[in-house]
Image 1: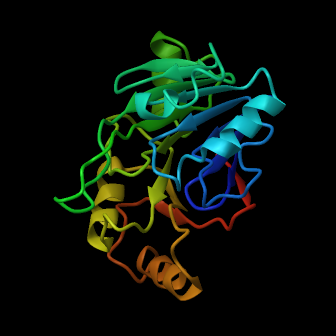
Image 2: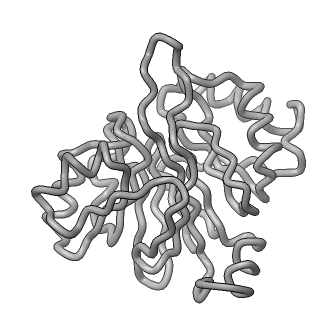
Length: 232
């Protein structure tokens, strides 16, 4: 499948002529959700969820669907009956031809005085026909999976081909990011959640996540600029 980095926390996945978009929030391009057959939203914070942009995308494509947690779904369900699906940890579903597993429950701790909102991550299977049994196990063990954790360092407990790594946030520090990649043990880690970093900060993170840093346990670190794409 083709993975295109969009602004901040959003990515676009394309396969067999269908498009799945994750977290087209307010820090992403205004058209980030446009043309999507399905949209996944990890949580309600505005850098991941922009209600106006999602409404525009749903109105433009009557066949488009959204999968998200209750806090987001309740803001859209009435206007788009039957097209907004509520999911939680442990759920599985098919969206735009992609098979998706839901992992995680809560947003990472920003500060003990700030209440934690619900947050889910999505493990997207890119292999066709990976529905049940051996086919599913082989696809999961292979490289054709992408995991977007949202705003949490959730470990899905499954083999991950591509980890979408939350690079920088008020709730994280560099050592946690490194240890998270090592624990998930993906084939590669692509940066997301980097919209608050200027070029010098991106360069520092890139250097520390590369050969000059402590190491990611064998995972390849990849940075895509918004609009750049890779095959995964």
